[in-house]
Image 1: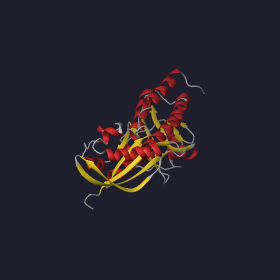
Image 2: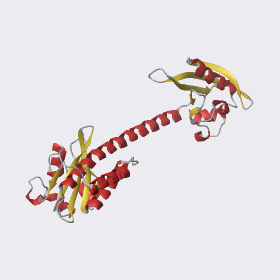
Image 3: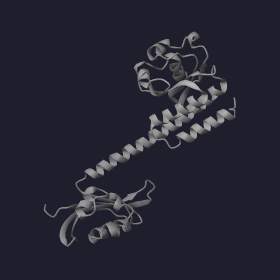
Image 4: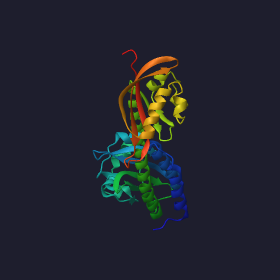
Length: 288
């Protein structure tokens, strides 16, 4: 069944509102509020399918989330459990006459369920949750409502996948940042055009530079290594030749003082072999 103008506009509004949301609780709350308000529903919940096959209430509208989380939801149990198990949307007009309905949830939350609309949240062909709305104030939900929520379930699934992807990238970035910041040696990474991409705190300390990395990122290496032209020559050689330099030592002048620097330099290449830049590890070993 094709969506009418109202439902199409609502779908567009939801998609537009979640486009730049990268946190799953905010995403879930935004979707629930938009659709519950537009359909004039008294309540709504987004459940997340957990590895143990339980359904965790991620966000709710119209009912205290704490009360919902005290209840037990699982695949195969209740209306939302049926939706999760069969990956099919459902519209229930008389919950009391439906064997799938769990009245004890109403008892624990104090909510009175009169009508139900629920659909699976799908990502990569698999159910990862359920979206449910309760009690349209004007009467039972209709078929266009069911079609709308089914579409939203698929779009929310994609949005959740994007959230997880971005979280994974951020976690990986933070881990790499922590590794770089934990090094006892200085680390400088540049692109192939000789612009600085990354420098760790120790790298700044050895050169006696401003500890704020953002001051130096995207600056030419020549400016960064102005106080240590010897190191500039080394990393430029790696950039130009593409050959690694392993465990070398040199004496250079930094701020008018001679320093013995141990260093290694490597080219940074893509899997295709394309040269992306270079990295230099260096340590002040003067007193060793």
